[in-house]
Length: 365
Image 1 (cartoon, rainbow, N blue to C red):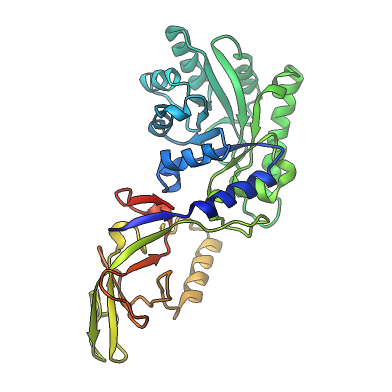
Image 2: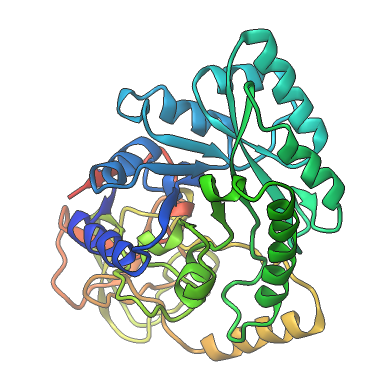
């Protein structure tokens, strides 16, 4: 039996350390991607138990799944992706999900549904300050102000936000530019309605932004990967890297020097050795990676540099430093058994929870 083990004590420490660092801000827990692979409802429920009451997701089915869970009836759930389908908007508003508005088209649809169903819609206005995805362009101040003016009986503006494109940058340059654009927009809104911004959530910082630029936290921050201790930068807050795969040894073997191990004959035993077959493979999400997706010269050079640095390095299992031999298969991997592994022994395997097959059990310990 394979399982993704979530270490609850370490997760709790991450939560408390982040809460202490962001003590003057409302924390919006980003639980997209099935709770970053930790299973949406159990993970969000753990956060709720630890005092987090605001949540954000990226897909409508995730928002509905939370709101259809009794313990989340009074929690704030924000869907960060704008919706264009009328039926979906109806379902979300009936469940009390806060919706993101990225254009007047989105807002007009929400207002229409609210009036027809006699509902009050909670919306967060998204401002695009340089990410190039969803939201009113920061240049389009007229539409942004018009969106805020819709605040009334059927539509209530409860938040405004932007999204950093490079918050993990070592120098505060790209993010500073986005902050200046967002500040300009907020200034125009304040000129029009001085009191409105005092009663809504204003958020721009994701995990990296909240930890690197504490002076720019606004009155709310969105924390996602930081709770898992998995950040692309050195954190100023002590965080544990939580979650690992646990599986079992399927069998052990003995191979002679020169024997092939695994697919493709890419590995030949350099000596007589004991081996063990571990029940985990790329079908489960083990040893799979996100493809390179940036093709500027500087990015290609970085990829090449990373490949050169990894040349000759041996891949190991998380527990006991068992060297992986040859290619990882669909269902299993072979390791050098110099630690006394026996069939049915449990082993721990490092992994990225987001890439782990959802069919694998999530176990909170």
